Length: 200
Image (cartoon, rainbow, N blue to C red; front, top):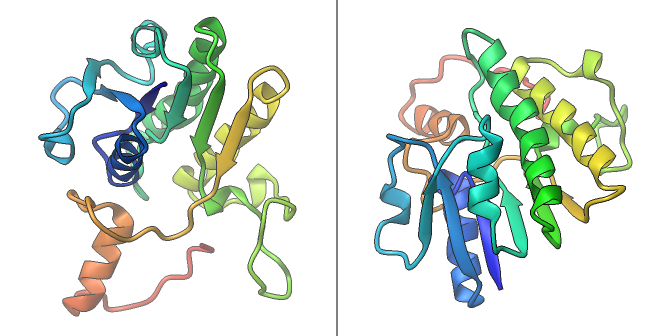
């Protein structure tokens, strides 16, 4: 069994890669040219250079694999120009699913976000039954995750897709750190003068 992992150099992706290896699943990871690869050093995996915006690199990466873990995304609360985050997170997700169909992938696990879910009026935790609309989602990152999840739902008719919605992940291999990790560091280092309710 072999899995193709997008976003393997990132925080969640590096943890997915390690978990797959523990389960004796072979791993081929997509890495952008020039992307830091410290999270993957010393691991017995294949690296394929490519980009979520390049369908041919995705097909090369998926060739001979049975599983795809689409963890890759541009995770930033502020991106300018805003079009880039839509190209990567929305169009890139469609590219992953198109390539998976072409390569006969047996199952795709798509890492979405709690940002793609709605909020309950009573403040209780939401799940996938709590729906929202794109106009109720605040911020480009959250909008892209919502739109990409809608694409995943469309493709799930012909492609076996599992959607996961992490909320505020913390842990090992958050090397950059992610915006989530940076928020925690800023709080711990007393660099956060205010609290912002981002709806997550």
